[in-house]
Image (cartoon, rainbow, N blue to C red; front, side, top):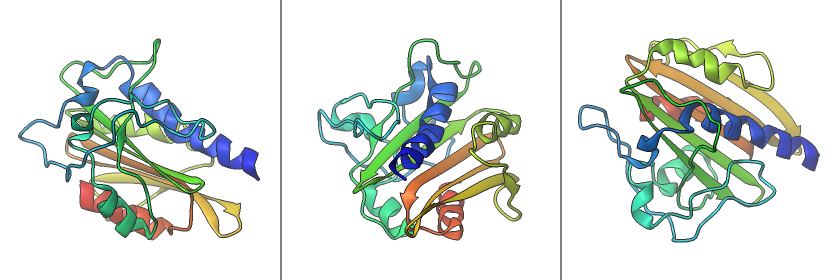
Length: 196
């Protein structure tokens, strides 16, 4: 089962690498015209657990997590306890965002779980397909969430699930992938809705 957990964590990391890599704006807060996310700070030197399969964090100073939802917001919405957010950066060879687009990826760790939240602004809603292409199972459409939304849910056993929801509203896309959490898909959808 641990192998399944690790392979599912790669889904969120792959999405961050695909869409945020090479984009120098990943540490820039969303533009003033965008709805800001509640801010938080990450401890200096923080990094993702080595076994998570997610991209390594920057270990950047606390100010780098500006724009990320707080751990209290994420934990409360999903019914879990998570660390302060750490900004995730892309890697060499990653696909950059289109000109004018901005992106921010925030990772939250917990005991044997992780949550990745990504926010893209000034992008076409067609970017949803870049997220759903990395879902481990076929996506399902979610009605009533933003202008367009897709989700997946996959049981990992022992009351833990791997779930993801990506939604577009105007030119903003929010993606949340929760790996090995007891949260329901409805809780993940509600978190995405609150961040749009």
